[in-house]
Image (tube, rainbow, N blue to C red; front, side, top):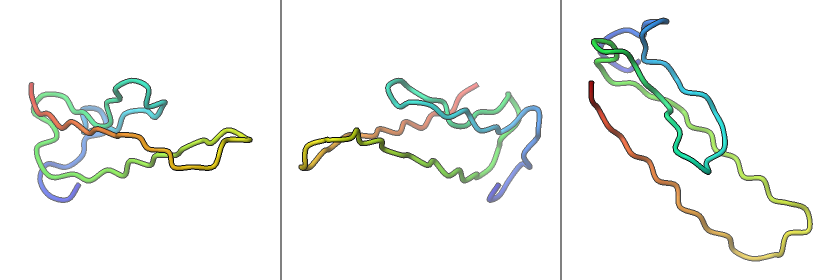
Length: 70
């Protein structure tokens, strides 16, 4: 928490679980009436490069959507 409502262990905000980026991931959420404030969250990302990969430049796009709602 940076400022605002304290983190509640049951209602949030709570961090999501990790996993592959081949589908959308929810990284933080809270129940209604919880999570009113400013929060920070580290989002570590790693890249596995298979053995014998070709030398070159590889690019990817990582899109982050932020939404707020009931």
